[in-house]
Image (cartoon, rainbow over all chains, first blue to last red):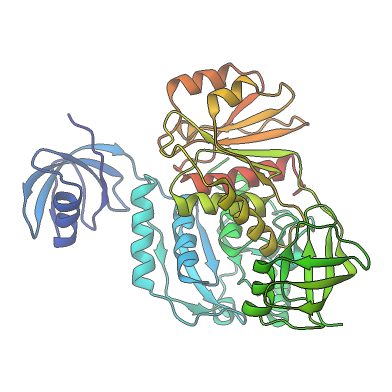
Length: 240
Length: 240
């Protein structure tokens, strides 16, 4: 059996002998860009059924078909961790989404804070970016990217059982570690301008929000995302 | 006193009353791009004397002068940690240099491994990138970026007292923590293709090389850099 060099997310059921029909873009990618043909293997995942090796059984300009042969990875979901971040410049926002997938966030939630520059995102583009990142890093899970929402409103409806790791650059250099509390968590990374005083005092007043310092240097938002996810995964997540 | 909004690295001595002469590019940046003028304040650092507030005392198209007034940050050097990495695509290599500065590496060393794609780097461009990153993250220290060298040769002359944290993506999912050993350290991040068998066995044979796993997912090189620096700084560095 040849080994699959290409990994593809498909929004269809996967399983032994299951046939998977390709849409036009996928056919273009596999046959046009990657130059695969009949009998070649592709690794498929759908975010639910693990990863499957599938053989190309039909090719075409507008579509094609594959047949699943063997499961190569069982489904693996990251811990119940949300990532909340204030969107920044386009390339760096893309980067944050990519890193959140690699580092194992369950849900990606762009939030609008008092000092956030952008007031809209392209949710569909960011979701596609999350799919690509999962294809690259051999993940079997793809986090949902939620539409941009106001931090204020999100905190008003905050689920009481979910802890919030609140990374505040105003605390750079302080010693403020992550408390060892089980249960669902979220990480909140502020915008380049930091949080407003109102936001900071609101967060301080929440019983389940925990300020955490990320070292003595000021980190850019996308660096803080990877660093915070590392701290969390090491202490409470699937790096243990 | 007005507060400096601009931060600039200058390769000149800084101290009370010290005058600093600008070169053409710096004058263009301060007066042309940032539109600063006589009497405006700039934050200066040189990698040795901390950060100083300096007042613009002379402006011109080809130069200018500033006078240091007060020290705003004392000099702060990161721990004795080298970052070794295999250069990848241009934008992502730039990113690695930027992140190494933010995360507090003392020295940045691109290395050529068996599976490294590129066989040269633009050392001067990467060094300039490190300076820019330090300007951005309020660091007072700028790590040296060393010319590309072969990993093989570097390991042949490896200083016996320096520990090496060796991040091997082949170990994704294993539990392999960082040993709590004092002294100078280095972090080695492999190329996208991983290490060769020869490299892996050579590293395994070194008494001061310690394999460390970075979670269950495969990380891209630039993600691994931030994650590994977080792990090290938390356990042994200046995040404690």
